[in-house]
Image (cartoon, rainbow over all chains, first blue to last red; front, side, top):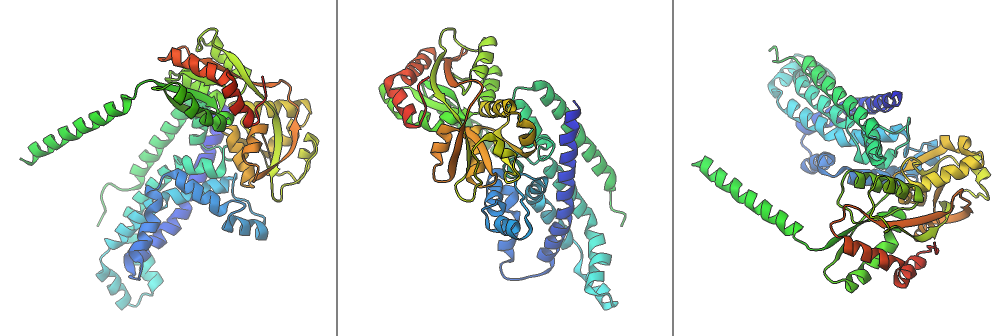
Length: 222
Length: 256
């Protein structure tokens, strides 16, 4: 049963990297959508939210066509840097990032929109630059809402299956994440392995939820 | 008031949902055939002719790797006919008493081949060439769940090349996925059946055929739990008939 820890660690690594990426991408895009008006903003919001509603197989196919060896981005990466993303754990990170991205974006946008613009204006009047306003006023006030979205994104990335299977395949020890390993075990009729993996997955998710409850205080202090 | 309306709406919705379900399940005489992924094109082509000969019977296909099909049936999937790409999986089904006694027949034979992407794929003349660094990734069905993968692994093991190929292996859910990996150029080579290679002639090239330890012959049998045993036997008879065999031959399958 040692083999069960390999997919678990891989899943945590993939979900962790995806969440870290989404922390920057989602918070940045959420802030931009909340604070700036520009033509096509609603369209951009809709496109960025698309991964939440599209079937993961559709996303997997888009990724396969885009970053595959024959895809425009994949061919460029391969020719210039010798990077191949398909069948690598980095490919799994890209799939998980894409699928979980809207969860951070949505909560970050809502959280930034909930910050009173007067406070930001006051900070500017008091002489703070734009970056300082963001890091000392906007971000601290929106933090709780963002954190909730980030934890949801982590859970979603941990459970990612469809797009991951299409992009990263199922190579034991390299790209076979927990959810893929469960699928493989059930397909092969190995119920013992499946039972163990399912138990591990459930316990891990309970741990994530419990620590999420601890991280976020029950009520805001102010 | 609003509560009453919402209850009424819910009840209407429930009735509509039930009606939709019963309408969907009311289709009479459906015959579910679980077949190895490599059979998909040939079996799909047989369907209209068989249905024309047997009015009122509707064929439903479930294509996957043979082991996955067995796992589904062992868990009680309502399947009438099982066709696998190897004897081993069918033997397991027989041992678990999942087949109707006497309904098992071998209906076609196939051969294993090595393919590479048509454009830019490296050349190889024998299995030994797979050890060269030119081949970075090699697709094959996962040996624990896909017969084509088992045949490939056994061939590599007997050539003492498994240790060299295993680190490069990219495992597919079924043989058609391995074919797709090659067709997209994501791997330098892949193990598939000769019949699969023929389906994607415009994207993959056949390097050579791989001698296998055991001959590749496909068995078909009626499933014990079948609710439609008569039609199940009729479909098996059709597959074995000259008309069925002609379709299979057109896709490159050989006589058993």
